[in-house]
Image (cartoon, rainbow, N blue to C red; front, side, top):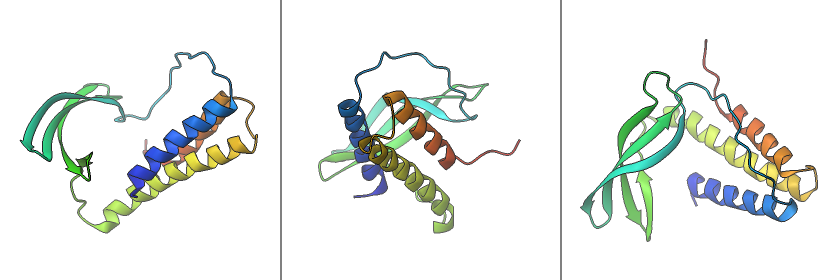
Length: 146
């Protein structure tokens, strides 16, 4: 299982743990200050089938970028073992990929740590657990020089 699959499973397990340990809380709209040039959401704007196991997706990205908050980018998705996965371009070198993998692993570790802490009873509410997760995830995001 690659890091992406592990993170997806960890996110699902964390949500299950939160749902089991805490009663549902009302949802609130919170303003979150995000670093510049971060993708907030993505949606498929168009799809072109190249072959039965390969498609091109025009993705509409909503970002925190001030002058152009919406961007269209093209990604490829490939079907392997019955599952569709985004085909990312190869990095120029393992040295360039290493920091990204490290941040990805830090986010995965944050999910696993918070889930374990919930099971130990270390949080009074789901909000506290999510705040701890957010704080841990922010540590995985590199700070940009100002």
